[in-house]
Amino acid sequence: MLISLDVENQTRLKTVEVERSEWLSGQRLAFVRVSLGHFLALIGDRFEAPRVPTGELPKTKVKDAGLPLPSDVVRERAFDLDEWVYDPTVCGRVVAADEGDLAVRCADHLITGQGKALLVGTDRRQAVVVEKDDSDGVSTMGRVFGVFTRDEAERAAGSTLLTWWEVDNRQVRGVESVVRGRLVGNLREFTAITFADGSVLEVYQTPVDGVVRNPMR
Image (cartoon, rainbow, N blue to C red; front, side, top):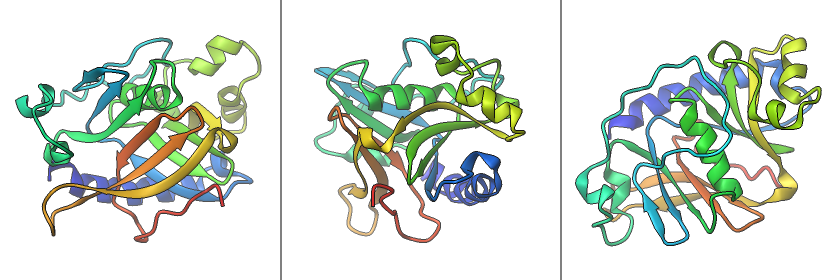
């Protein structure tokens, strides 16, 4: 699988980076997930492969990763169940009712990061986080709310990581590890976040410690 080795290495490196960052201050880290690939999206009756972000999004200094498109089978939704997990260009999917659902917004920020944005779960929040040097200007939250936002506070505190998007865990129904695939001995594990609006985000995982802990507990 194209992404598996890079995911394992990057997950370990980025977990250490988050653990050492001022960004985590006062929180308990549950997991860090990298997004090295495309996302699929089923929004209402509309299927996208790959998902193309929409709406208000942050700016990034990261160049387009130049990923190849998913296979014809995946793009045309010609699979029966979850064979899409074997496409080496795909790192996750979104299932939602509407474009404005939380899982869609979260995924769109991850996609905008061109493989550099991290999905980070703590005992307080689920967030999309980027390195300060990869972010160009203030986050979406900063432009929308126009106040002394979290990313401005993080810059002032000298954090190397900035928050592009986040929700409080009160807006999350659960976080769990799910297994996808059709071939015994060749299955894929994903971290699945179910948000309060019913939308679901699944991101390919290679657990550092073999366990996905639920930050809601």
